[in-house]
Image 1 (cartoon, one colour):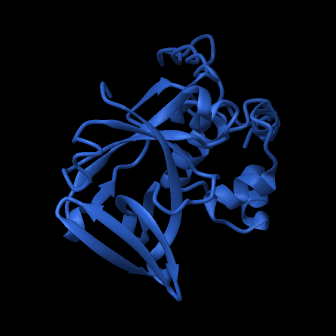
Image 2 (cartoon, one colour; image 1 turned 180 degrees about the vertical axis):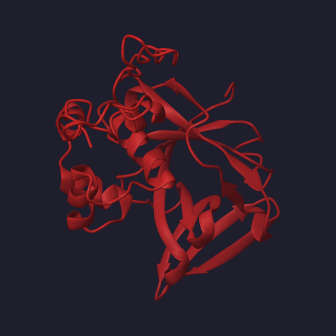
Length: 229
């Protein structure tokens, strides 16, 4: 692992390894081992790490191999392992690094329709980037997500882009993005916690949903929307 690059990337977004551990829902020791190369980075962790650092996924993958390390004595560096091919190699040179995404853009997540209660199922990785709205200025890990289905009409129509602050506490009467176990996603109105249940309101058709606490991974506040998407 190119530990120096990851340290600089964390500093650039004003975050620590502890912040990253909370974002990835991992123990700090697991993140430390991962950034040292003692633990393999999983594909979904690449996705979340790229969103956290505000860089493309291939940028993370490129630095998952330390390009400053020397190979063992007598071993010829192999193309595709973090070093350029030798002068006489016929292997095509790697493409130049893509520029980092500007800090005034946030990743867009997408979901596929399915399940009961008009749940979505989150697709891996950002599908694009959109300008950062003013109310998310400086917010780490802010993102946008497309509304799928008509369960929140007339407030939101399918295809609208919702802006989300993952750190602002949910507010009664405001809308939230709820991540359940198994990558299921709900966009509903937040009513509150009653005992061990998260209570949500759906607008179309009107219904009250109760989600057991053990099924809820995260609950993020929707802070705006873009009709144009």
